[in-house]
Image (cartoon, rainbow, N blue to C red):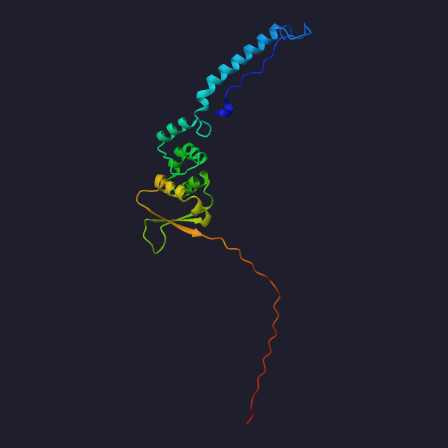
Length: 190
């Protein structure tokens, strides 16, 4: 939205007011023209200020708190301001995507959690259990965020459990394997 804001054009002063074409020194019309242009730049900033406050990523912190209240987002303990801004910005889209597995994965991606897998209706388990597989580092670093996502966007009649995926480096070597096999049969004659 901020990319489409009107830009004040550069001041093009006519030659008879530029203050240096007619005179060897800068004279009064130059200073007057520059002052008027600076005044309009100031007015332009005042007029565009409300539009700049409409974006959760760039607005003031007091406006951000008001937007968060409006979108039913609460800041959890020790949450960085940058993450809070992203949560407020995508609150409506996240609420819309909360109903499906693909949408739930997109919520995690938007908030920067990283790779996750979601399984529903696991065989041999109760129907209301949803399993979320995350990396061990994600679970330790983003535990409060994960809990907040489940609290805000999780389905009401479901139970969520986290499974930890621990990546393991596997090394294998390949080498030729030769094996000779001989079979000798001995028969005793009577």
